[in-house]
Amino acid sequence: NRPEDIHGIDGYLNEEGCPAWRLRGYCDFGVMCRLGSCHINMSTGQNLRKTADECKSDASKDDDNNTETEASQPKVQLAIGHQNDIKNVISRDTMVKLRKSTYPFVCKRHFEVAKEKQRQKEDAKVKEMNEEAPKAVDADREHLTATEAKSVGDATTPALPLKERKLIDFRNKVYIAPLTTVGNLPFRRIMKQFGADITCGEMALADQLLQGKASEWALLKRHPSEDVFGVQIAAGHADQYTRIAEVLTNEEGFEIDFVDMNLGCPIDLVCEKGAGASLMLREKKLRGSVEGLTKVLNCPVTIKMRTGWDEKKNFAHNLVPNIQKWGIEGIGAFMIHGRSRLQRYSRLADWDYIAQVASSQSSDYPKIPVIGNGDIFSYNDYEETILKRVGEGGDTDNMLLPTAMLGRGALIKPWLPTEIKERRHWDISATERLDMLKDFVRYGLEHYGSDQQGVNNTRRFLLEWLSFLHRYVPVGMLEVLPQQMNHRPPQNMCGRNDLETLMLSKNCADWIKISEMLLGPVPEDFQFVPKHKANSY
Image (cartoon, rainbow, N blue to C red; front, side, top):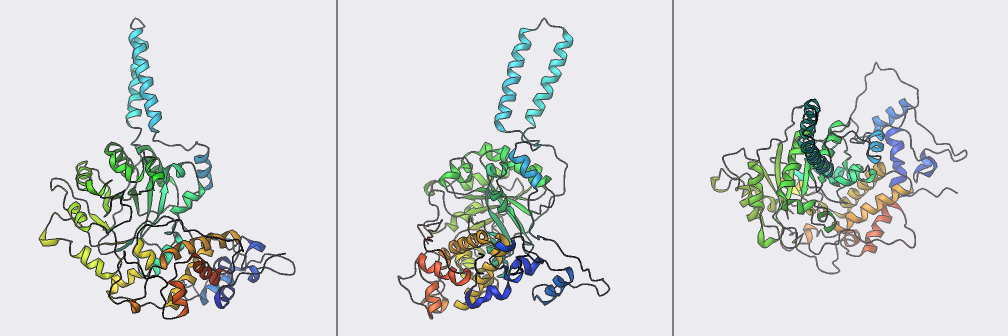
């Protein structure tokens, strides 16, 4: 009763076979694998396993594998196991401790600190009432109270061993900003293929991480091709940031180059928890959060923020110098999105205000680099909005870096890093874009699995991405170059061939048709609604 294998257009999935079988010589999903005909004995149902020398011969045929083996090394005829090369996978023991609230945190929660202080006040009252008690008892109690007070004072700043802090040079780099839902690991692999220098995982909520939610910890995973990689955390309390930093520091095998604090998420659900953009409004909690992260982590901490809460009352130019005056070491950069929280993604980003924020820091304290973000959609945008403002007019106070930080531009034009580095407009063909989608599907099946659930996840994230990809208008069809982020294509636009026309469609049914070309047919009752329904382009 096993269903037939899925097949992509021209049967390309069947030719490549199961990604786990091809890469590691064994598929954990067995008969449940939707590409399992290459590793299942159809007569017995046995899930086959390659031997080590077979995997070596397959690896030598792979164009992407440049690993050389020594001629003198003997061939091992033993079966190999499932070897996962994905990094930042949290251990099962840590997950269990987080779920059972038994993880040995040094930092205490804010309500625990409040209880400690309240108990100290009660003990002080008891001491006053018992003044006639023996002096020895009073001395012991004073010593105990002093010790407890010290522990409460250090509750949000755990004294962990000092480590050498790594530094990151963001200058002249293409940085792919954290993108919720669509900025997943397979997508970041595509961006690395097109020349991205720095990548960052999707926004992860600290409260979900501390509860041991596997789906949230999966957002921190890193592929070996991501040579400079960061994670973004959103939290509403300093103790949450500090506790997450403890787990990241203590967990073996975690490789993180920087941690990004989210002060820009405009979603109501996040802001109601005091996280995201609402943390910009609470400097006391923000200072405790930055101190907690920088004292525990051995990597730089970056702060991503918006211009303010309301575009009529921007205050990032005041917040940035205030953070600078705190004198906290370990802040790698400020990242300013040129829109307010209420503005979300409507209207154009205010790059003049970003330049104002970059020049607002005091010369009395060490200056912190500033990276701008918003509406970079071509190499012309990068040069006119960023490079012209970097050190404009010989201004030595301007800390704006020549960094191309890409958000929606990377979703609509994943080849944008190539355009920026080569200073050209790439008239990419529909066939080349389809090959890009094939790579995404292959990476998705490798990451999410080749069983039915893995296929469903891959299809879902492919459709979410297609909800942005259809906005791209081919260069050869434009009257004026370049296309702008806020330009809406005409209704029912036709491409230069049928495939290009299909990719220009705004209809969800056409996106599903593209997914069927790559992942096989969907059930009759299948429906898709984009998670991100932006009110602007």
